[in-house]
Length: 307
Image (cartoon, rainbow, N blue to C red):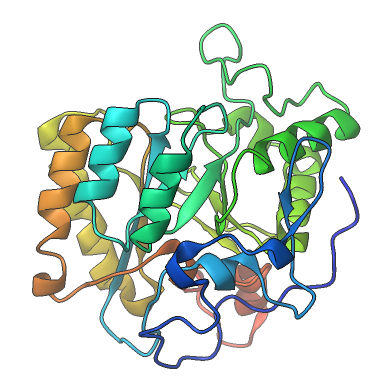
């Protein structure tokens, strides 16, 4: 991977009201200053003034809010236009959407989501367990057997599929890149490249360490395995309990495969979150500085788990 650019402007500034996100692009419009030419199309970058895509395209959130935070990323979007449009229409703007890089002709859907103020992620096709016989991440997958140059090319291809997103998730739908993410020598260059472009990274593996080289977060619960109505509701309730335990550090859920049942259950659940004393937060309001967990663990008197 290329050498990372200078550290971008921190996406999570000191707590202050952000009812209208400082520096957010009006209507979610893609800013030319935050793009540069790439081998496969425009690539995101840190702007000349230091602004990052995280700051420009993030959903407004009041970081002084002391209620327990709960976030949700819904993936598997773009391949089925009807389900994607229903997700955009029914889900709250604070829910983050992850689109497949293999999706074609989705400009209209992306415009709808941006116009609603929703945060977008690009889904990275990282090598999953069982690739390619059981789980196939496609012909542009980032693989452990490829050279660094080949993986860099596949990453740049994915990042150039569309614009206006705050970062990436290391999952392609229900495939969560376990094999690729197992090795620091393959995962760290991806995180370096994302940080250098002012993007965040969501690790879709529950229990994984937070990203060490990028602004980001690992998910806490996968809410759609299995994707039945009852299990989805049970997992969402578990996510709420975890958020209450952690307070403003919050809990982050991931749904890998958007479906009518999933969209319906999340929409109903999300409609009552605020009334139950929780703050529904976008991913950009829940991320940590690279290495934050290690730094917290090394402070005198630090507990076993940094929050």
